[in-house]
Image (cartoon, rainbow, N blue to C red; front, top):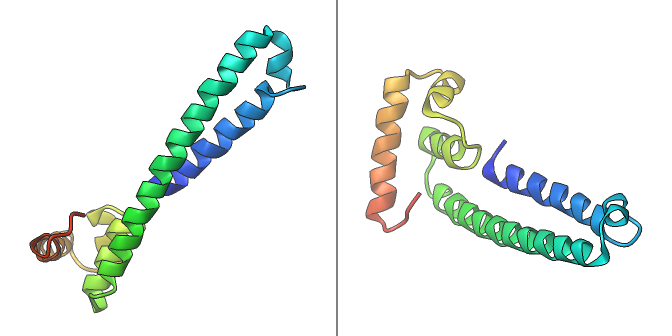
Length: 121
């Protein structure tokens, strides 16, 4: 699961929790009106913060994908697996059939190229 997947899941869970605090929800019925309103406000704030964080992550991922598209072949595959699929270097080595050391060295070289061009990954 990527960070984006996790954020989407957290938002979905918080929205379900919010619906339980809204009129007619099971949590709303067990608390006072003011407590219910306070809880709704807290959850809405959390949801908004999660959505902001999600938008930032998606924007960052889109920029990375645009940058990755400049590379070809194995370099492209390594970067996609590392920064889009969020795989570890050892997982990439297994999936590509190259040694861990080779993938680590190649990734380090790619990262230097990317950072030299002013992009942070």
